[in-house]
Each structure stands twice: as structure tokens, then as C-alpha cells.
Amino acid sequence: MRTFEGMAGNEPALRVLSRALASDDAAHAYLFHGPPGVGKETAARRFGASLVAGGDETAQSRALRGLHPDLTTVEPEGRFTTIGQVREVLSLAASRPFEGARRVFVLRANTLNVQAANALLKTLEEPEGGAVFLLLAVSLESVLPTVVSRAQSVRFNPVPREEVVSFLLWRGYDEEEARLAASLGRGSVGLSLRYAAEGELRELRRAVLGAGFMFSANFDERARAVEALVARAEEVGAAREREYLAGFEDGADRRAKDAAKRLGKAARDGAVAEALELLALLYRDAAVAAAGAEELVANVDRAGEIRARVEEHRGADWSGAARVLREAGEGLQYNVPPEAILEVALSRTRRKVLG
Image (cartoon, rainbow, N blue to C red; front, side):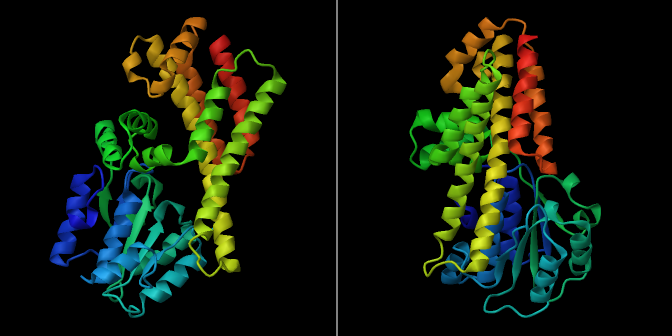
């Protein structure tokens, strides 16, 4: 499995893909499904690079760096991949590869709107030429059944914590930061790596920890805590935008700048969602500490503070507070301002704790 060397976890899925490469018998469509950050995108990029390269190591290297014309990754325009984007893909799929052994297209299946998914169905059922479609989704349920039935399903699971720790140690992180990042990553290698490497994400967590136990604060203090959270989320988005634009050595054109803005907004929204997850994780940690299972606390560097809060608020409904945060994340799907989501969520969790 040299194509997937260095990837942590999900050996069954990687074996399936490695056998397809070894036998030169890839299916015309695959659906990689599983939680965010467990290796789907990395596997798709490496698998796709091998397919277009056809054994040419130089071409494979270019494809891995996003510089091969026959490996195309389609990013959604906002929340959805549109029918216009799919029609452009289908036009390319019907023509011969520019230079590679075949064409490969990576799409996020759970962002296809109904019209876009239906436009893709005929090609998935009766593919032209040697095009291969790599579809990514968080679950089978998030994809139209008609799409699911036309692709080979490959499941990616959360990676066990100790495997993530070993992976981070291999990447050069010390044991303390590796264990904390693996705990915060919640089975996601990608998220664990981000906690180990990205200062913006660590700052977001610091703001979350500051806001999470402000039960005695007044309205203005809570509002300032929410502002700090949103500001940290904006920094995550700005960093993603800068990272994308840095890849254009000769300067980014207008199309690239528009793409960078979309990626930055998606990263900001993802950071707000992560803030809600971190708050839920904090209250889940309080719940397990209250139940006497402190060894299960994920915020291992804050175990003492969590224990003190549990002692301070005996009888608090910590599990109920965690549920409030998980329910609050649904508002992000409907373009509710993040400030409003966070303010309401923190107010409701305060009532769960104080009674």
C-alpha cells in the first residue's frame, strides 16, 4: 500500500483501493463515506493521483500537488455543488485525458443538490471513456440513494486514539502535545493534526474554554466572550484564505480570489461548528468526571479545572448542556448568524448547569 504510506487507520479501505491499483481494475465510481477528517480526502487525492499517473512517478507527484490537468477536485459554490459545475465535469469526462492514463474527478456527494445529482446519474450508470468519479460524503444517508447505488462504497471509520498518537509522534510532535491533539481530534487524524499544528485553532479552543464556564457572568460579559469566539473563527477563515492564495506563485486572478473567499468562509463556518463541538466536549468531560470516570476526559490539560467546576456545581445537568450545544449546530445549516447561535446556546447551557 505504498500509495497510502504514512496514513493512519482504515487499513480495510486502503487495501480495497490498493488492490484496484495493483490489478488496474478500478471501478468507474467510488463513494468514500465516513466522518470528517478520517482520511477520505487524503485517500481520494492519492488514489486519484495514482490513477491519472498510470505508473509515471513524476506525473503522480504533480497530481498530488494539484498540478495535473486530469485530476480535478470540484469545490462547492457555497453550500452546494451546482448543476453548472456538474455539467462542466461531464463535458470534461466525455473527452480524452489531456495527458494522463485517465481522468479523475473528486466531488463532495453530500453537497450535490437534486438537479446536480440527477445530471450526474446517467454518466455514473453508463460512464464514457475511462473517467473515474471519487465521491466524498459524511454518510451514506446524506447522499441520494440513486447515487449510492451507482458507486462502489468504501467506508472510512474514526481512527483509534492510540493510532493517532503514534502517527503524531511519527510526525515529530512530543508525547504530551500528541496525546492532547489526539483527544481533541475525536478520531479524526486531520483534525488532530490541525490541533497540533494550527495556532488559529488552538486560539479558538482557548476562547471556547474561556467562555464555557462563565456561568456567573452577566449578559455583557457573555456577549464579549461570544465576540471573542467569532473573532477566533474569523482568524481560522482568514488563514485558510491566505494559505490558498499562497499557492499562486505568479499572483492570483479574480477567479482564484473568489475561490479563496469561498474557502475562507467555509473554514470560518467550520470553525464556528468546531467551537460548538468543543463546548459540547467540555460539558461531556464534566459529565464523565461527575460520574467518576475522569480517565475519559478529552481535555486532558484541563482535567483539574473541570473537576473543580463539577465540585462547584453539584447536581448540574452536564449531559443536557452538551446536548444543547450539539442541537445548536443545526442552526448553521440555515445561515443563522453565529453570534446568535452562540449567545442562545450559552444561555441555555447556563440554565442546565445552574438550574
